[in-house]
Amino acid sequence: MEEKRTARTGGGWAELAVPWVRRVFLIGLGLAVIQQITGINTIMYFAPTILQQTGLGSQAALTATIANGVVAVLASAFSLYLIGRVGRRPLLITGQLGIVASLIAIGVAFSFHAEPGTGASTLRSYLILARMLAFLVFQQAAVSPVTWVMLSEIFPIKIRGLGMGAAVLLLWLVNALVTFTFPILLAGVGGTTTFLVFAALNVLAAAAAARKIPETRNRSLEQIEEHFRTGSSGPSGPSASAPAA
Image 1 (cartoon, helix red, strand yellow):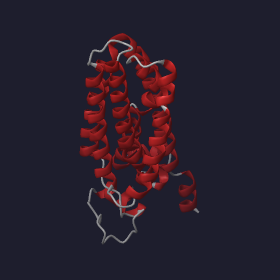
Image 2 (spheres, rainbow, N blue to C red):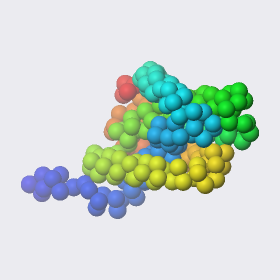
Image 3 (tube, rainbow, N blue to C red):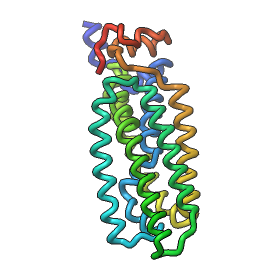
């Protein structure tokens, strides 16, 4: 009877007093922050604004951003292939590094000066669009799918509901913060500085991911929990008993 009562009342915030559980919880929150601090929704929400600031006309900017949606869908479809064949951790880190390179490239393109309405201005606009599309490939094919898959894998059963709820809440709070501050930064300091700031944040995010986030591919939920509880590496390659997810 006592065991059943414990099973019913176990879990929740009290579990965070256990150091390894708290560590997993914080890693989950970190994944949520990493996913949003890439600036994905600045590209998705403000692409027309970004392109208009480069000198592209409003109608042309709206039309050009259709490419964002097409690339995002295709990259998401490609992620279904990648996620089962590439480790979560290297895919996440590769995506982060690609995002850093894309953000730097966008920032550098903003620094090119061209008179509005000229061929050089139009060329700069489409150069920035191409780099935005490269950003979306790394985000939608790597960082976003890894985030959601790992959030479903890492939390121990006793805090799975709490962990997922807290991570998703934080994800949307960071989304709101980034969405609110991006147009202010873009108007205040310009595209070059704005995108270089995001690039710097993503360098820190990539370093944190490389240091703190373990590999979970080819591990059962029990093996992942054992890894966090004991600190052991456990099986992680193709010979592991759990099938690839």
